[in-house]
Amino acid sequence: MTTPVSASSPVFNGDFVDLTLSEVTKVSHDTSVFRFAYPGADDESGLITASAILVKYMGANSKNIIRPYTPISDPRTKGYLDLLVKVYPEGKASKHIHSLKPGDKLLFKGPIIKYPWSPNKDPSIVLIGGGTGITPLYQLIHEITSNRGEDKTEITLLFGNKTADDILLYDELKSIAAKDDKFKVYFTIEKDAPEGTIPGFINDSVVKKAIGDKDFKSLKFFVCGPPGLYNAISGPKVSPTDQGELTGLLKSYGIEKEQVFKF
Image (cartoon, rainbow, N blue to C red):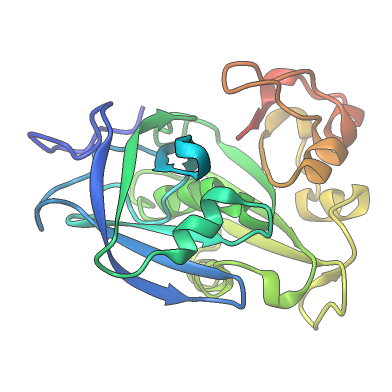
């Protein structure tokens, strides 16, 4: 398991904590990075990879709205966390976060442990994501590639999006791939795919091209994205504690349910 952050009093200890928005950085027409400051500049999160946090605010009719988000900042970062948030027309939490201005506050709770990572836990992993589903996958990528002295895990990322403009963390992913020969990334684009990307969706031919001659039964798969991606690739999870049955494309490869983790 990833070593917990060595903070005498971590920010996230299972109770809700009020954090202040300090900075907003727009990254696309509908997505921004929101930086929330910890109470102290030297405070650390107490999170591990891979884990999430909950955000809470008072919605209409005095009802609490609670949603999970995965930070993109390193869990060991002192003083703040970064959330990559895409606003959706019907997304109550995303619309609320996008309405915030520096100085506003938001309630957070964590950690919500997803998949405790330790170096070389899985020798070769395949990450399949779409849209904002990249955030927990990016957590794994960052954790592993930042620890190459110890962690030799091979990573293959298949990342699907509607258009090139929708690709989140593109520069970060390309930068990591340029420096790390154990990390390979494949971008699929549904509409007007530019050079260097794959037209269409993540399908059988894309997966087999990315995996090459590796034995499917030697791999660990991680999936995160919209419902359509889950349905096509792995089948949906039932709840945070029930991964559901393995269906879809991955099922057709004859791998075991335990080889797939659905964020």
